Image (cartoon, rainbow, N blue to C red; front, side, top):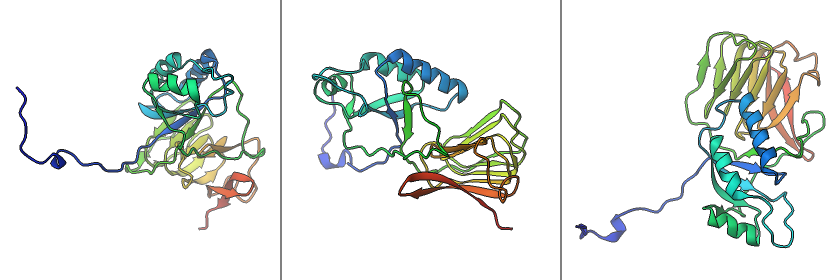
Length: 257
């Protein structure tokens, strides 16, 4: 038997605005097999990178002809869930594809703003057209920092999800440190350092001795093939993201002592 409260219905709940950290899957192919292969490779390189993260499927870059769905969403959605992504919405879908998306539980996110950086040839490598590009939506870092007090050897990886990362020992070549916030390395950085992994453009990388294989902030990265200037190579330095008319680029500068 249902119990009916005599209280005013307005006391049953409140409607308030809320913020949700999202990532966007910007598709560049309709080939589900290619997307699956790319996700498998990414998860092999960064296991546990996605942990039931809500995602917007952005099909704006796909060509839709004669009102025909250009991608099999019925096959795509379970694939994303298998890799730790939770599909919530679709962006850029028109007519029949949008109807199909709503039929599988996705909402229309055509108004969603997704950050896209303009790549620079000297700091950004091109992405193969058959691979999906994950563009994080910027989210604040709320948790306390993760602290690592042992050297990281080649093949080891540390990911500070939703927080800053502090490393008190050397990051050797072949090792990788990732954080959604800042990365502080109170030793030599010889491996890879990826800060602002989910789009935090304000994140920075600090190291007592900057000798990285790769540095990255919010998806903009630079490899050792593009050698650092002599005034920062092997010295105490910081890395930040600098925006300009030509797009975003990494700025590496000495730390003043």
